[in-house]
Length: 265
Image 1 (cartoon, one colour):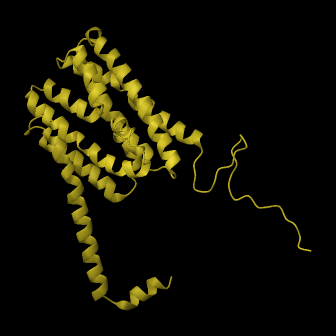
Image 2: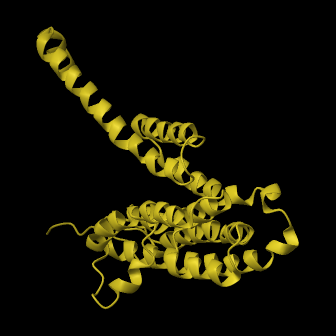
Image 3: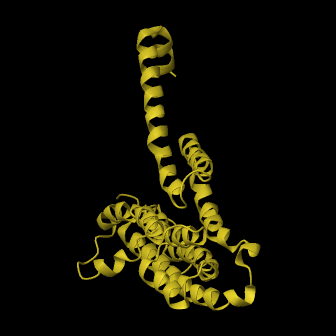
């Protein structure tokens, strides 16, 4: 008779006793990551509220931007351009084009989340940098939906609450430029983005984008340098592709013995 053996466990079991299939992620880990991003970025809505009020927007206008636009980079670009004396239409156009990136996020997230049609218009409001950053790495659709929902809800509520508090407290703070709060939002975003720059190509692209933005800042209207800094990505990709093509050509024309030696390792 065949010997009976206990089945070998190939997956780790959480402390609560529920099993986690291979390739999945515990809900608690997804929620933890989502809350971390949502709270960290949501609190910087205070900086936007103060900056917006300092640029001359009313309390109602400031809160409407956070409620309806809800994309921090575009909001900061708009009030920053207005504070620098830019034309309102130019400032709005710059903020709009900066927010177009969310449409490309939506193309990817719509396939990953596969939400019901009735929910999609509401979910579209939460398609931003932070929700995309949390959703895309998730291993399953369930984890992706959970990460998207928790990040979006946490960030939306906190961002709007802190925007209101910041706009109401702007007068008590006095000169907002002296506090440097306009840099809080970009600083938080950079802190979240930096760990994601793992390859040399990504780091070079980010560095070139910064150089373009800083170099064009003194000569172009407010908001435009940020848009043009996006040109760093196609430039770097073109150079990388060209370098790979040259390397392939040299390998083909060179000593084949070295190629065979490397292939035998």
